[in-house]
Length: 335
Image (tube, rainbow, N blue to C red):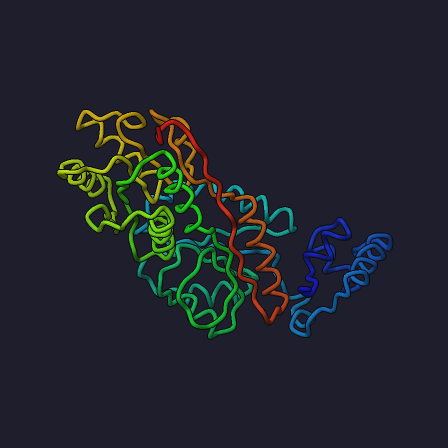
């Protein structure tokens, strides 16, 4: 059984994490009834705070910093506002404030991280947009600074992360196309600098293998950055002697670009050709046809990010690594 954390104590006692922490440390602003309830929950769960956590008491800002990159973002960043709104709600449930601290792509992040954490502007960081090899993870781990990653990278050093199971999501969407009878399924992939682009492509390959379909490299266009590149890839695919009958896109925007390119050729998406996306942007339900896609459950992701980061801040020596299951949303575009 995993050891209990301050988050578990707070949930058992029905209070916020900050209240539970103050009660355990005999703070004067906690009522006797609340303190008794928190101590009872701690006893029931056999909770023992770490020495690191004790040293940190009274020195926290109550602020969590979210540090996305700006400047060279993948298409899925249309979800930024939705994600931030959910993350802020999750912080509020834990009696925390959220600081948005964007990093410019290619800029030296070390000074920013040091000012945020060693300057006590924030108690911990949430990283996003992880690369396959991510120097930020290497630096934060080596400096023993508290962070959790929204995503995974190839770092050999253990670190805490919460990630969407993107491979499972694409596996589900491509398997859905196979179940509809499609055998020639093209893939429109995202920039391969990002880890999740590889996971989504792996799901495509896994679904083909599971459906006993051979992987045809001519049907795969990875590392698509822009609408122009995506539409050009679709035109090339439709001009093949044996064009694909279905398209699996690694983002909703790639899928929407693809549908517009199909219409330029006189094809009707959802009738003549099947299309699936990934992300479930708010506009995905309102495209024509409405887009079959993979939904990211932001509520579950954000709650786990905050709970995991609080464990790291509290001195957890065995960082949690969690995968959150996505959901396939079937609409009109898959036929």
